Length: 176
Image (cartoon, rainbow, N blue to C red; front, side, top):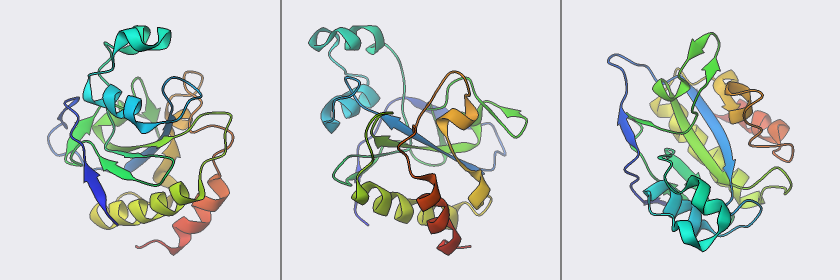
């Protein structure tokens, strides 16, 4: 699978000795409900033009990133090295552990709460998850979750149109 490097400056060191054992799947569209990867990539790069849309003015100063971004056409962008902490989950908790950014890999899908995801996004997500699990064996099938799972009440993504059943079926075939 071809992955395009697109470095984000929004990351820092993981705590010493941290084992990556969680993947958090997100959905993003900028402005909300509109698709086109350029604004999302601008946001992750810290160069979203605040004057281009009223919503951008509210978020342009935020420092947000993810390890990967998959657009509607299935293009996979690599934003942050997996050995670094990307700033994707915010205030979060999973299995009794806070600060999920410390021990997780974030994958953003171009999408929202109102639109089904593209078939190609699921295909690329499945391939990417298999590669991540090979590199990080502590990421078991039950440790691939949504942003809503680690920030309930605060976040809803990847949203009601995300096909968890399909992703869970594909997890069965993944190694290890």
